[in-house]
Structure formats: structure tokens, C-alpha cells
Length: 344
Image (tube, rainbow, N blue to C red):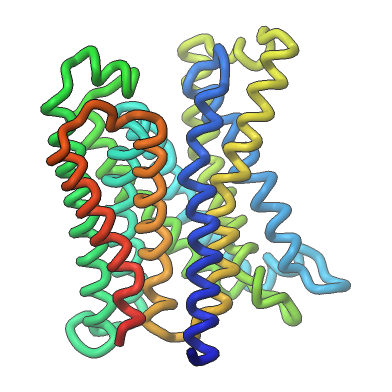
């Protein structure tokens, strides 16, 4: 096995670990007690989009430097990354709603599938990649394979929905609403792809002497800060509109601490995907198809692990053997799509 192949496998493993963290991030939220959706979404966002990205970005600051100096390397790039982050923030809001209406498995599958395609293809086109020949064609084929796997999983979700009674749907997903959930998930996927565009825009934010492992994290910070602005504005508006701002002040001490701890855990797990993506990409060959495909790999893994959690959380309980077979087939296609570009 060549050194480059070994490095690629290490990079994929690191991305997979981060992806598993992200796919697990919605599990702690189930432990939040007595708070409205907008309250816990904002609370976990403080950790996911501000605190942990800030700590991660500090790892990219070379000895004797400062984070401000790193972010000032290219101010227009920093502002552009934050701008894409604000657009991504809309996707983040609707992404959370897709989980609410469709459940962890189906909601993440549809939203992340759309996100993976747009977030991979658009940056490649912006760099002038010809998607119909050479490495560009391999990249496009890999994206199509990922979308095929996600489409099959989505079909399995549709079969599950048709075979369940209203009572069973509500038991698995409290606010289940298929049509509304599909529309929200697709919007979430398109807008969430702006995160990838923000990372591309923030590539110049690397200080001299910064570690290769952490060099993408300042750009990640700018994107998440932009997303936090959008999410905070919406959540605070809903807090005032619904009177749920009382959640932060009238919750008994023990429950408040419980909620904040689980929100912090959810935020850490969510951020781990981009921490892992940045570290994993440092092991991939610069300019390679695998490097260009890394965003799609992350999203595909997120879908895979989210469906594993969907099974664990009994969202697929009681479905027919045929539906399970369709789900497994979709997951198999997804797993194959992750290694497909490395076969050439």
C-alpha cells in the first residue's frame, strides 16, 4: 500500500469520526426538558456555532500570533465567508425543522443529499472544472452515486410512511408531516450547501506557520458566526412571539443545568464534523478528486450514520422486510460512492 493511499484512508477515517459525531448531535437534544424548539436550538447554537468553532480556530493560530491577525490576512475573504454563513444559517434553521417533521433518518437523508450535490458541484464549477471529462467526470459520477444512494433511502422512507398508521408516525416522530417535511428538507439542503461555498471563500484565511491539520478552522469560524446571526435572529423573534423567552429565566436550576449540558454536548458533536473535515483533508492529496469530493464524502457519511441512529431510535420499527432491504441497498450505494473516486 502506497503512502498516499494510506494517507487517504487516514483522512477518510478522521472525516468519518467527525461525521459520526454530527449524526449523533440530535440525540442529546432529546434529553432537553421543558424548552421550546427555538430555545434549545439557540442554546445549542451558542456552543455549535460560536464557542467550539472559536476554540478550534485558536488551534490554527501560530506561536506568537493572534486569531485577529489570522482573520485579517484577507478581510474580504473573511467577510465573504461570513456572508455565505448567513445564507447557510437559513439552511441550518430549516435543517432542524426537517428533523422535527421527518425524523432523524429521513430528514437528514433528504437535506444532506441536496447539500452534498450543490456543495460539491458548485465549488468545482467555480474553479473551472470541466465536469464532463477527466477528473471532473469522475467527480460528477461520484456525486450522482451519492444522490442515487440517498434517493433510494428517501424511497425507503416513503415506503415506511405509507405502511404506518397516523398513530405509529406520531410515536416515531412526534410532529411528523411528510409534505411539509419534504419541502423544508429540500430548502435546507440547498441553503446548507452555502457552508461549502463559505469554506471555499475563506481558504485565504491561513496565517504563515499555521498547522496543516487546523488551517481550515478560521474559515469555519467565520461561516458559523454568519450562521449564528441568522439563527439567533429567528430564534429570538420566536422567543418573543411565543413568550418562550421565559425558558431561559424561569426553568428550575437542576433542569436548566441539565438542558445546558445536553445543548453543549449537542454543539460539540455537531462541530466535530467540520473539525474532522479540516483535519481529514490535510491527509488528502491537494488538487485530487478525493479532495474535491471531500464535502460529498462528509454529507454521505452523515446520511449513513443518521440512518443508523434512526434504526437505534426505532424510527424504522415495524416496517416490512422489503422496506428494510431498500434501506440497506441505499446505504450500500452510499458507502460505495465514498470510495468510488479513489478507484481511478
